[in-house]
Amino acid sequence: MPGRSEEFVVKDSEGILIKLLVVPNSRSRCVELGYEGIVVRLKSPPVKGKANDELVKFLKKLLKKSVSIVSGFTSREKVILVRNADTDYVVGRLKEVQCT
Image (cartoon, rainbow, N blue to C red; front, top):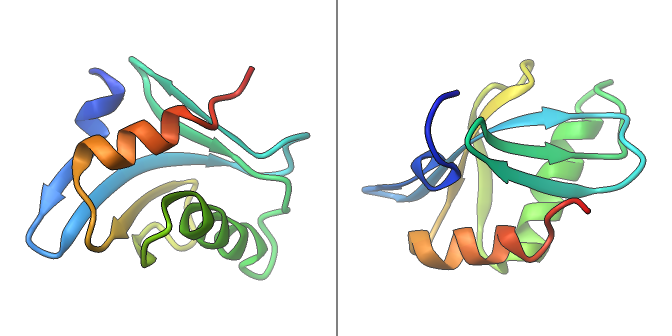
């Protein structure tokens, strides 16, 4: 995933699309923003949709918007749709929960 993290948050006709990589079974829930892309670390295992459920709940709570998975249901690489938001808002909120 070359480029800056902002390149992975793009405007779409339905809202904002976030291209990200999920890392399940992590110690903490946080976001890594970097030149490689956006990485979301989750505590849940990738079993029976648990990590997907945690991802959607985490992003809904963080962004305070409607969030859904558009593609990548069985992959670590996912595309997320955030309705009624703009790019600056989404990137700003993601920066607030960066991994330390």
